[in-house]
Image (tube, rainbow, N blue to C red):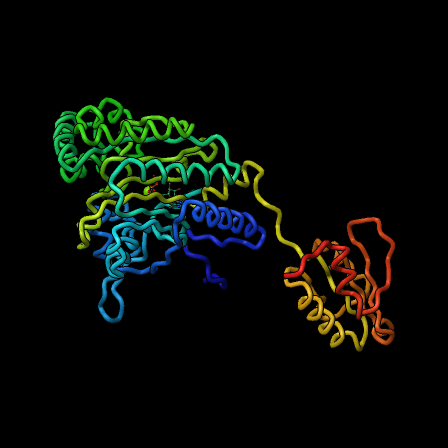
Length: 427
Ligand code: ATP
Ligand code: MG
């Protein structure tokens, strides 16, 4: 038996060295959402299993095989959320948030799907999620796509591609479903097991198959865009016009259906070819029936979700990963009486400069050892305190990455001196 407890398959740790890129993504995300008047929303990670079954759809990958579900001690049927939309819809209904009719929110956090782990595909992953409720027209479709485009642009990502399609209304989709059923029925012998099952349950799902053999058959399937109702067509054309006028390049992808059942009209995806087969970095669509389907007052909705791991991978790949955080100052303490005096000095500096990053040498060590640590920490300056300095009320200041003569400074004046050396601002 192994001595170590292994991590679960398909989960990953975000190491301190990677945190800068994550925080960068999170900071830009907050700024961009604020710029469009979207408010942050935090909803639970666990929900009743029924919520996802009722919203995502029975013949989807998620509900068929990817949910982490369990019965707890109180016999509640619980699922770790595989996506954010269902929980947000549940939350806006249970909190009566649709009374005012309109809402624009976003959230960020972990999602769970029991899929086959690969690079860019995990069992616990993170999404940034945008949702808007109460807007019927194509203006919100344009806004929420523009928002995603701005976020990708602000991150500096290049080589991304926007795919759009319309799934029409449930009625036009029903007609299309029959056409698809007939088409795939004629090719039944060539279908894989998943697709055969979906042929009976929901033939639209076959369009979303990841099996290359199925994709060849899918290529010849009838197009939903051809049987679109007039209202959906006008909605789609207005969205496309908005995107053109905003200078957002897009590609109409008539077989784009997305892996969840609740979408109506607009669906879209952002893809990249820089991440191999895990090419979708953001995806979403309109879900006009979902609020009513989950027991709320019929309200249109639209949203998207962005995979944070895939974005971080892209940032790293495109050399946009931000630098790892490091202290500005490392405090070297050598001598019997320096531990107490050193802690005092460090707290005095942190009081003066709330944004100062200062690391104190703990556990002693020779000058040489401590200077090595100081250098490795990446700090710009070392402050040096020995018994002799403490006795004289002085501290030595040594630049670690610049040619500057070592100096001595009275402890009473070090706040000011460091402020000048590091260009610190108070508050
Ligand atoms: P895929 O086709 O890659 O399975 P999906 O259609 O299941 O994606 P969505 O439910 O639309 O994905 O999720 C939105 C985004 O979240 C995806 O585009 C992707 O960036 C990310 N994502 C989805 N599943 C995972 C996962 N298992 N690991 C990491 N990121 C994921
Ligand atoms: Mg999937």
